[in-house]
Image (cartoon, rainbow, N blue to C red; front, side):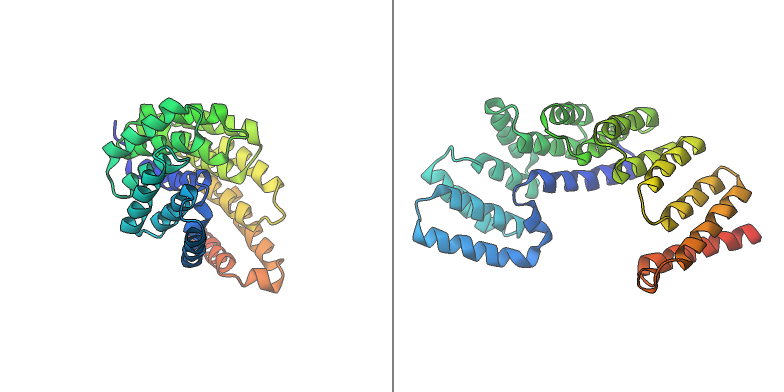
Length: 285
């Protein structure tokens, strides 16, 4: 079964975060302006020691993150001539194939890595990503299960990605996705990223009380309440509990008014207050 557009979009966003977590150079992707300096620094090291294959692998990954495909391929080929079995070389090659949308070639390489090193977290995450790109959700789920089994500790992105893959495979089976998230909550605690996604799914299931209970657990761990009170109002409004929704929205505005001037004037807080006022106006009308 093909994923719904919403489930597919969520899965792609979660897998992007997962790819950054599992990549040793993931932070460089977020600091694009820093890549030039990193590449130049590795180039200087290569000039001093041109026989070091690990430097070509490192620079090839930086070129890949910079989307300089030809330069990345050149470093991969040079590293391969120095040592065809260099650490990280096949993973870099597979990632470049993914970037170039040569998915069949990427599968071949990543399967080879996992035949040799079945506990390679980066390779498992990449194969799961590939399986999602090809809508092979059952295969992706097997790799997510394996990742959760061997990662120590497992990252919340893994639970989010598994839940999204479950939804992509069976969009109507919200309960299974919620159960997947609850496994992560049991293992890692009431992380907002996991609980907020579970809240979305509970709302989609029409389970307002379950969503509110989860929201309360998130709110109790937060020093600021305006966002959670606004969210509480939205859930109550969906459930047709207008008087309670009004109380929550008014509480959100009081929480905003009680903030110091700096936080109160941020764009996010101003937009939240505007949304809450709009909801109250709808209730008044």
